[in-house]
Length: 407
Image (cartoon, rainbow, N blue to C red):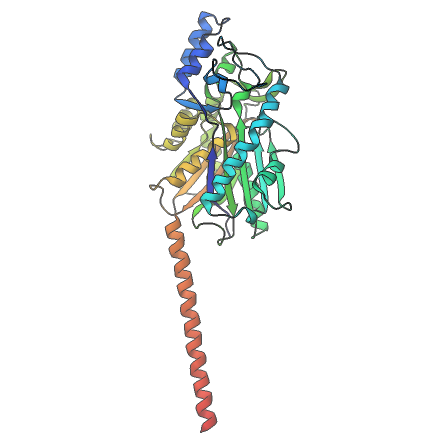
């Protein structure tokens, strides 16, 4: 049986920041020269992002109320600070579990899945570390069975959700009764910093915080019918790009290298990577592409010769939530699950990009709940008819035997 995504739940921190406000905050730093200010304004304005969410309340309101002992990322004068990596990671440890549990509860509730049914947990994150980690906390916070099997995919970057779904699909293929809870949680804004480096400016203009969870199973009796069937997955390394998308740990947070070559590499390589993945298959009708940034989506659209509205779901998530690293592709898939225009049997291609430069791919099929329910009803009706026919035949045979015995 094919594994399917039954449901997807998403969660974001309550603090919302408007793109123009963050742009003005960065452009207004004391040490910012005229050229850097112009670069900040151009990059932020070209991002196609309207708003994002963050755990850093002072990023939205430098003069707002602060909790006692809370780390300071922006002082009351609006100056960006430089907390150590330890301070940033402590905040990750404090904030990530609740965000993770929130997304997971939403996925379970939306799919009609009892937490007691979960057999496996797969967690994903690249923006912080602690142990016992997010997988352990999820078992405790949701009251899952202590025998739930767990694994964590760490520091893979923006592409990690698709490998996590691949792991879940493989578990479901070997364990038909498996119910896998996959959760991606990223708190990217923890690593924000003031900088005149163009790559850091790009990172500051796009990254945001969020979590998304998916319920994956091959058991047709688990949860509500329908969802996204996980048909197959693929991975490809581009010929170059190893130094163009890099994620390392520094003394003042994690440091992202995101060069201007990334969109160009993707634009140059995407047709070949997707062609090798799809093979002789007819191109899918719907695309879910990780929005590393507006220019990445533009290059994918041009490289694959897609229609102007083909990446509408990806652009919508980028506009409203920014780039939440690994969680973002699940936000896009969640939007497609809610979209009535994505009919039963529609094939969906997922693409995500990570350090390496790595292209992760997934081919999925949309199954509408109504259609799945009709199929189930038809199967039940056919089974009932078969049982009735068998019963009638048995009655006829019994009657014949009775007549023969009394003759």
